[in-house]
Image (cartoon, rainbow, N blue to C red):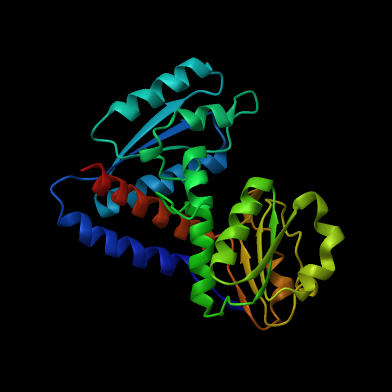
Length: 277
């Protein structure tokens, strides 16, 4: 397998953004709401902060403890909505189980929802009139494009941990001409034949090493968007070592989808600033 280097792709996007931001009188501002002590979430937020500082985006973090009341969370988001210096807002997911994720996301001003999760922005995307390209699916598409694989009529399978992501990713792929479908993680093992026949496989399940090389078609493009922790190790959905004898392309974890997702998020923040004027 040839490696799709997400760090390289992400850095190219960030260099372009840094050049554009340096020419602006107004600096883009990103507000991040972090709730609780999830280690993976803390790592993601620190990577976003570092990238913001590198390219000239103002970064503001609202750190709230895991026992915070929902009312307080909504209040902090409303303050960011009304802050003219903040152009993009994200709530770092996942949230503690007791909190209503959909309700909290719905409070974000859709014009500042740079992750693309707000139901209004999802609706616009599904209608082909997106305000922002949803960052996670958008990053996956950039990695597929990097492989050089022509998507037209390519048999593509998405393994998803939610119906919402599966449908969104399927639509992304179909717009590029792919023959796409998705399966939910709980049905993954029932669909091994479909996976074996796929020219492109996208996985975002968060189940460590659930996909092995023998499950994949030789020459396939495998985009690993899953991430999980096992001790100090960060693992993806793909058993990396078992794919080494295959031809084709693989995005690694870490260093694949993650850096591109961060870059796409900051690109949306810059675009939100431009649109706010």
